[in-house]
Amino acid sequence: MERSRTRLEWPGRAESAEAAVTPPGSTLRPSFYFDPGRHTLVRGDNLEALKCLLPTLEGTIRVIYIDPPYNTGNGLLYNDRFGTWGRDGDRHGAWLSMIYPRLLLALRFLREDGIFFASIDDRELPRLRMLCDEIFGEDNLVATIVWRKKVVRGRGNRHILPQTEYILAYARDIERLPPFSEPLTKRMKDEYGHRDERGPYKKIPLAKSGTRHSPRPNLSYSLRAPDGSEIPCPTHQWRWSRETVEKKHGEILIEKNRNGRWTVYTKQYLRSEEGTERERTPESYYDRVTTSDGTREMKELFGEVVLDFPKPSRLIRDLIAWTTPKGSSDPVMDFFAGSGSTAQAVLELNAQDGGRRPFFLVQSPDPIGHADFTTIYDICRARAGKVAQKLAGLGHSPLPVCEYRLTPIP
Ligand SMILES: C[S@@+](CC[C@H](N)C(=O)[O-])C[C@H]1O[C@@H](n2cnc3c(N)ncnc32)[C@H](O)[C@@H]1O
Image (cartoon, rainbow, N blue to C red; front, side, top):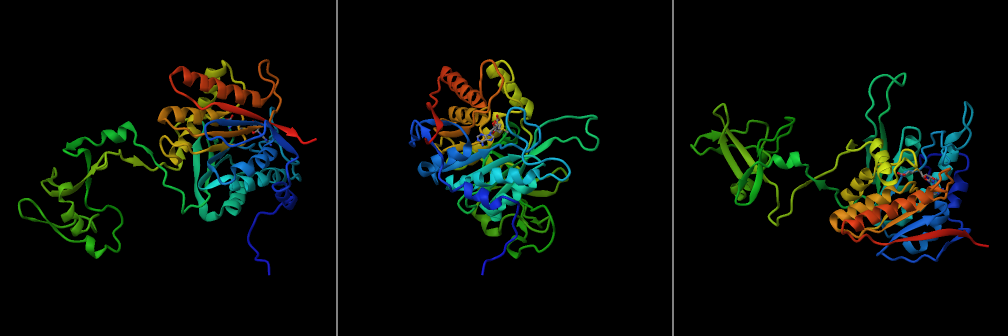
C-alpha cells in the first residue's frame, strides 16, 4: 500500500519531476570535464546545464547557493512572472514546476557533508519551504536566515515597510554537516582583556544563570573562599562539577566583588592550548550588508548598475566562509548566477584565506539592452574576469575561469 504523506500538490507536478530525469537535449561545448583547479561558467538554461554536468559532478559539491526568480510579477530583464496572475490565476504552480526539477537535481550534486542555500522572499517562501522539506528532509533544515536587505524608514507602504527576505539552509545530511563558525568581531576580542601565561582571557561567572528548575545534584555544592569561608552557589547550580573545578583549578578565579562578596569565575581563553583562536556560531539574523552594497559593488566594477538588485557578494562570501574550512578547496555551485556575485564571493574568499574553492556557475543568456553587454551571461562573465584581474593585480593567483556553452544536440 502506498504510504500517504502530507505534500505540496499543484497541477503539473508529475511532469516537472519528469523534467529532472529526461535526457538533456543539449550538450556542453567544449565537452566538460572536472578540473578542481579551475572555475566553470556555463552559458545556458540551468535545467539542461545541470543534467549535462550531473554525470561528472554528482555528489561532489560542498555548497550550493541559489537566488532564483522570486516570482515578483515584474521581471524586465529575465522572466519573473510565472503562470497566470489576477484573481483566478495560478501563478504558484508554474513557478513550482520551474523550481522543482532544479531542486531535485541540486540534491544530487551535493556531497554527503554538503549544504544548500536558497534566497527567497515572502511571495514563494512558504511553497519553497514545503518543497525543500520534502526534497532535503525536514530534519535537514539548518535555519531560515532572515536577511535585513534594506534600511528604510518613514512612510511608504500602507501597512508595514518590508525590509527583510530569507535564505533557507538545508543540509544534505545534518548528521554529517560540520559545525559552522566564523571569527569573533573586534569588539568580542576586546572583551578578552585579562592575560596570564596562556594568553588573553575573559572572566565568566561559574554560577549558572537562567531558570531555576531541576538543579543537577553534582552541580550544586559549596566552594571554599581563600579566607576559608564557605561560598554557596548564588543561583540554582554551578556550570562545572566539583571534579572539574578541582581538575581545572588553574582556570578558576575567586575574587571579592564590589559588595565584598566572594565571586567565582572561570577563565575563558581567546586561544585553545594548540593556539587556535576561539570562533563563534553564526546567527540566523543577518544585517551586515544590504542591497545597496550589491548595487555599489556593480558601480565599482562597471562604472554603472548593469543589473538591478544583485546580491551583495559579502552575503554569499559569509555563507561560504561559515560552512567551508579556511583555505579549503570545496566546490561551490550557483545555477541562477545573474551578475555573478557568487563568482566574486568565491574569488575574494579564496584570495582572503588562500583557498582554492572552484565555482560552478550557470546563467542563461537572457538578452539585455546594453551597449557593452548583450546578455546577463555576458555581465556574469565580465564580472568574474574583472574581479580575478583585480585580485591578480594585488598579488593573488585566482584559479582560471573556463567557459562552456549549451549547444542543442542536432
Ligand atoms: C534573482 S537573479 C540572480 C541574481 C544574482 N544572485 C546576482 O546577485 O546577480 C536570477 C537569475 O537567474 C537567471 N535565470 C532564470 N532562469 C534561469 C534558467 N532557467 N537558467 C539559467 N539562468 C536562469 C536570470 O537570468 C537571473 O539573472
